[in-house]
Image (cartoon, rainbow, N blue to C red; front, side, top):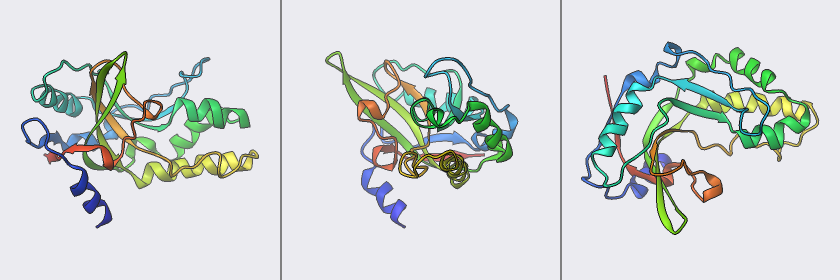
Length: 204
């Protein structure tokens, strides 16, 4: 009920006020491989649930037809579970390798994680004196939250504090497109239900 009230409160008038349509095949994470992101640099290491791209590409086309500016997409779809910043600045200093995190993800069968579609979210920020936008599908997932909790347990066993890595400080989403660059929390964009601008209807 609380989520419904929040969603109702924050959905605003959006372009032509039409709901976006999303294929239910978005939930078939097991139809695509688990991708591992491991590398030498601070932005090379993160954990994500890979997703079929076609359903998101279709939402991208619908969205592009409703707004006045051209959008860029990534050509793929995923839900980030551990961000590069979380790994590099918090988990790595405690001796946790990205390989260990991927092993936990394998154990949790990350590609079969269940999640719910909440809405289309929009983030805005002024970059170089121009307002830029990013659009994403807001989701929630107990399965992915539990995966983060398991990583926190490892972090605590390695001497980390429960306050240093909070699994609940998590804003799962699927990026759809953006005008210049994808915007994040560092830009003041929180990708949760408060950023909802349009409903999303699931299709078979």
